[in-house]
Length: 212
Image 1 (cartoon, helix red, strand yellow):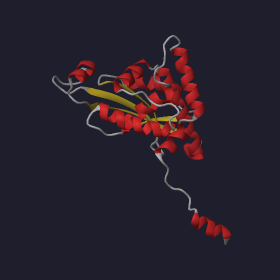
Image 2 (cartoon, helix red, strand yellow):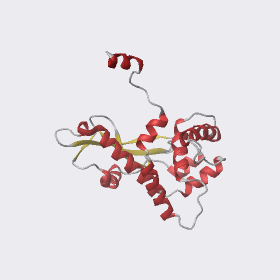
Image 3 (cartoon, helix red, strand yellow):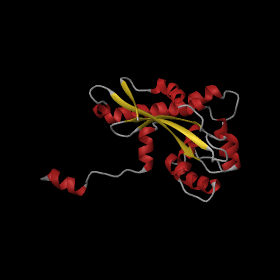
């Protein structure tokens, strides 16, 4: 009876905050590993933005809303300060953020992505396997982009003349749960086969690959 009364007073939490979820996937050990990779790649450069707030700002700015990048930066910065509990405050300007992000080695992002994939596989446990294998689907598709001068210059044309610039996306997805595992971006003329070859090293063990 006491256990029942206690359960009624303290029901299990079904909802979790974004901060809690991020901390589950991006652990202190993973942040430390990513920062060490960055230090090795940028030995002679001062790091005005520390690795953790820089990457968190990148994530948060993709989810926040605003009429401009500066607006999204301010919104993401406020949330980032909550995530970090004022231990490592982000920088003050969007220009400084962009410069630091442009210098961030890709090896840092790949290190974090590998850590997140390990958490995903561990969380799903036995549900990750189907008859002893990990069912992974691969598919590529073109995504039409806005007709901005910069995108037209960088992406070029992939089909007819005067067509909008396009982005080619190739993704690996767990077929049972629809969980994205890895992806590659390229111009509209990119090759799905080449993208897949680039991602072979991140396929999980015992993966059973299938076209979607």
